[in-house]
Image 1 (cartoon, rainbow, N blue to C red):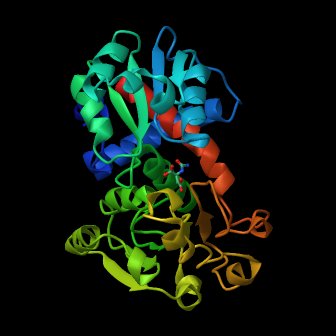
Image 2: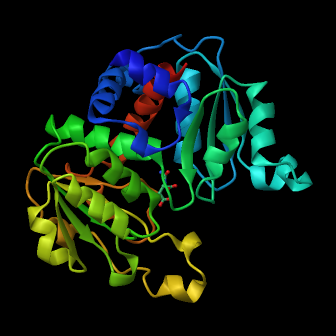
Length: 312
Ligand code: NCD
């Protein structure tokens, strides 16, 4: 099994559809081993001599720093461009494939983010080293989904049978899409999707979850369902994916999770958010012991360490 996963990750991690339940458990086990390094409690030289290139064509704080921290704390090195759109040879008309081929001459592994779905796969076609998708448009964000599912697994010691609420922009949010792709591999989950009608989870994802034997409930009413959730996975309304500011403003602020809402939550449940947050999750929730979104950030470094280690 381990051999199969390693062979697969030799190509990198382009899609959250690429990992099976067994693969996920293997990644979680590897992540557990590396968590003390991510928490700065231990040091490591696992990636000594290796170079990671981070190519970001779209804004990021956490994801890029998280990949870079993971590589650096494992003793490797990083070359980085956070403004690929403005300052790379894209400006001169270079294709993604060529960029992939060229950067492969410098780095041992590439992490890339772009605003267009499928763009990371395109660069990977030219690359001769593993490529990790750090978010491609509204499509997928495999390492974020992975760290979310890892956080759930760590908190509950299991995933089977949980009731998972996802609230926010389920249409354009690549994070809920990735979460579903991983979670579908577990057993007997209840998905509660909370969004305005226009921002519902894509139909093909809902269909797939049902065909895997999961229950799916869709509603616009957060208050009516918040009390039954084991996990409340919040997301931001994805402003940059809307056709106009006017269109975005229709949905901005439609859901707010504050102390009032959390008062109705189970005692043993967790609140996740990939961050950045805008107005959908109030800072007054931060001190609640069920709020796990800052822990997620550290878990994200450990998950990326595991992915780098399994890849190289
Ligand atoms: C997410 C992203 O970029 O998709 N952020 C992240 O990677 N932590 C979520 C978002 O931007 O809303």
